[in-house]
Length: 562
Ligand SMILES: Nc1nc2c(ncn2[C@@H]2O[C@H](COP(=O)(O)OP(=O)(O)OP(=O)(O)O)[C@@H](O)[C@H]2O)c(=O)[nH]1
Ligand SMILES: [Mg+2]
Image (tube, rainbow, N blue to C red; front, side, top):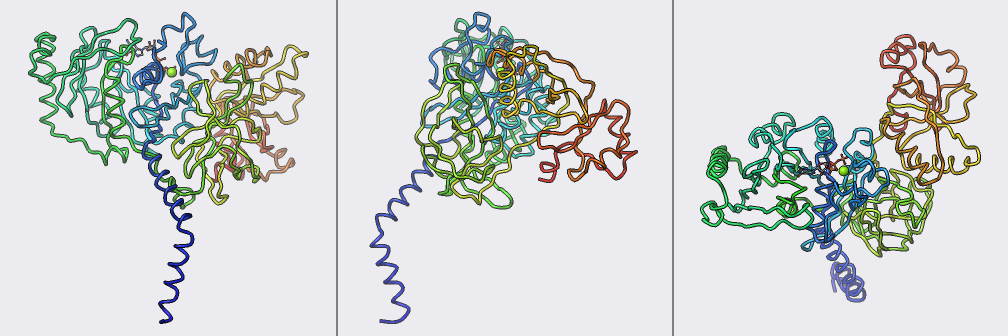
């Protein structure tokens, strides 16, 4: 036998001896690839009140995940939606915190994240955007693109996230649909392809024309939009469909459709996946009009989980090593279980309950025994999860937002954005007997990233100065302290609106030597990094003029360097 022939025989013998191992590995690879192809993980985003929670609710109804949609208006009767489950959300009728809902539909596993629209809660929304593979952008068809939608869109564009657009509230007098599509292109600078087109608007909104199948979908209203809307479908010339429309509505729709056809744009899947073009759907979430078409159209074109690039290394979802990162922490979701859930987006490999992983923050090995699939504030034990899935882990106090969990310690995700606080206040405990609950509640809310704590330098005040992105977050803190920890609190406004971080290597003497504008104060963040609090931007600029050797940063040094 030749010398070159021998190694080949050895390899063949090895393959034969370990054929079961190879077969098992191959099967596992096929299995994970198949599971990934079924996953669609997306967020619903928009300006406040455009109808995100209503749409979420209706997607659950059409996805078969709930039998009866809990209408948002029904909150008055204390019946909450699945998505807005917090006490304060029910009371105020606005979303305060993002919600994860996992359900199966048509062979897909959907991980849907409903986000809050208000800018004071945008930190939560932005974190969610790191965990999804696509978004549905909801626009109030009467208002067009509103400021917060534009900001969120920018974040999606920077991340290259594919965007699907739902023009909602077509049952109300709306802007001209051609003008709405034009606005997407002009204001957001993105290509827009209307997948369907509204037939009539306001009270005369009758349905939509599906441009991909050339079918008219005429809907019937159901009481309170609780059940799926009955629909009759037919071509433009179908007499049964034509007979249901008045001449004006019919002619206007046909005319607009002809104009769209003349423009000659075609659906470009690659442009959608690259985030350069958005498919546009029209409808009315509260009336269930166009929801099914949105869901089916979304699933047809939305991407499955893809690779993530971290520090120049591409981590494929099919990588056999498990990895994921924590993008949200929330305590007391279920009054029956007063515990804390860390939300993990699985990025690669297979998650198995009881597995041991490397935890990036502590650099320790941890066993993940309490894992859950989430549906609003309801949870169910989950034994395995695949890339794209969002799971909830309970019982790990050392977990923080941004942490990576992985079986390969070389993988480290740095996905989570940080925000500069713009609202400041002191929070006092008026009831000394409740000191423990007050402190425990505050610590928990800080871990969730709802607020940050700053400590004024040379101050006799013991309570920390709280810093938040917007003042509504203070309201949430006070409400949650009271309802979840039984601790009342008193808020005292602070005079600052701007915080800037100083170089971390500054010594106490250096701080003494700084020339501070009137009304400014030095403080320390939770990591003992020095900051300066200013009354306004002007004051911060003045500081930079007078302290030329002391650069200011809008974020702590570590984050700013990343
Ligand atoms: N007429 C009409 N009203 C709607 C429609 N969809 C939602 N609404 C109403 O719009 C209001 C806001 O709806 P939400 O779903 O709470 O809006 P949201 O975008 O989740 O709001 P935030 O989460 O607070 O930003 C509610 O009163 C809904 O009933 C619709 O299709 N037509
Ligand atoms: Mg909402």
